[in-house]
Length: 525
Ligand code: NI
Image 1 (cartoon, rainbow, N blue to C red):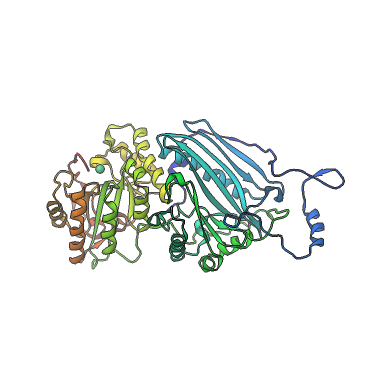
Image 2: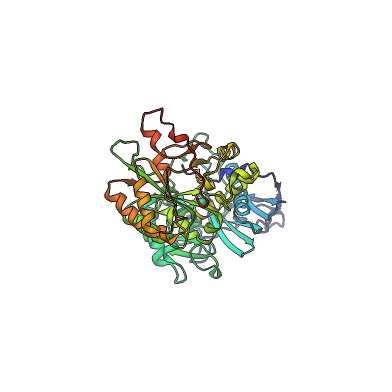
């Protein structure tokens, strides 16, 4: 269910012009040899050097509490490319090009392009985006590339980091979350990071999700360093913050890749080059990716006749009291689905991340909540792509589901959502909680309509709904229902298709035509 890149971004705009600046880097100076001739440092020279200092490894370089820094001058024939953009956002993005590491070049080009597109799509006030690169490891056929980005929009400028790890022997490039062995280990690391965070960090915002662990590496001593972007876990005026976890504590949490990365980052670099093109048919893409959390829980099977599933859905948020709802859901080990809209996501990004981290499903309810049937197909796409990009940037998750505002859909909406890989989710029980701000009435409607396979519509922006939810969740639990996400309820969904409940999957009556009815549009759903 999880995808690592926002596929909807890839097809969007032809605004990218690649300017290959095969300029030699400032750092990659041509060395003046003793004979006065210019030449690039080469392996032969290295070998000669090696005879002087036999097996003593060079020390890694860098500040003690920051990621190791590899001087590009110590990497043979490294150059760089620049992506320039002529869209609404002025962007200037550079990344390294290493000989014999084409998969890395392709990955960086694709990923940075998607980052710019997501920034532009997620921020109506987007202005400029720049990215520069550095190397944090280059040893043992492993390369760590650290990207520093600066994005400016109407709210100001923010700096962030992403660090990618390229394995020359497989040709695979990994995100930093893959330095950790699994989700349990990431949970443990997250607890250590919380403990060791500076006082300015809001511990509750430190969550074990991929988007927060996208820049992890090692200092020259092998301690693990986690870098957070501006505003992610601390006030914006603190800028980016980083946390160091001692090597002895971090080591048991590392994946094989993590151990290899640590080893590569803790020795000095001299005349590094990738050994050659990767072997053809290795594939590590099925490995677990810590921090990418599925909205489907393998321990629950809603198609089992013994299991009665209900999907609680909350639209138009998140709101200020959504964390309280999350507390109650956690208390009952219940899952819900949050159909989020644009401004609330930007106002409550930490609530979105928390809901995601706790196994709830995040789904798309458009940027500005229009009746999509009144828009052009491009207009529908813009509404959905913006929120798709916002949630991806906050969590690393690409949403699979959307709910059209007012339940209003047509062939045009179906075509766009199909193209974007989004299934359309309506509902089977309407609590009318936007109209009747009465907690007991909302609770009785939800409980009265609850049945196996039901999708219940509510709005977590209303205090009365939060109040009602405590009772709804407690009572559904007492009645033996399992509260699940919509994806858990429906199983695999078809992009573009419309779903009202989870009953057809389970029941065998093909004549049940009630599914085709459109619920009446609500002014606020
Ligand atoms: Ni709505």
